[in-house]
Image (cartoon, rainbow, N blue to C red; front, side, top):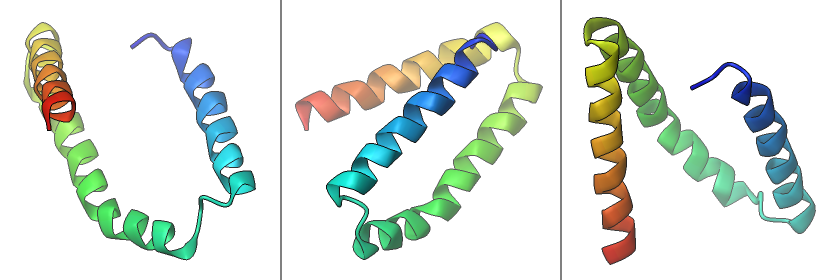
Length: 78
C-alpha cells in the first residue's frame, strides 16, 4: 500500500466512527464485542507483520489477495 493512502484512511475512518457515534450505533454492547475481538485482531496483525518479514513480498501479496478473495466469496455466498 502506498504511504499516501494512510492519511486518507485515517481521516475516512475517523469520519465513519464519528458518524456512528452521532447515530447512536456505539452502544455498550458494541464496545463489549470490540474488546472481545481485540485479541484476535492483535494476533492477526502480529501474524501478518511476522509473515511479511519472512516471506518474499510478491508471494506475501499473492497470499493476501487469495485470502481476501476467499473471504469475499464467503461473505457473498453465506
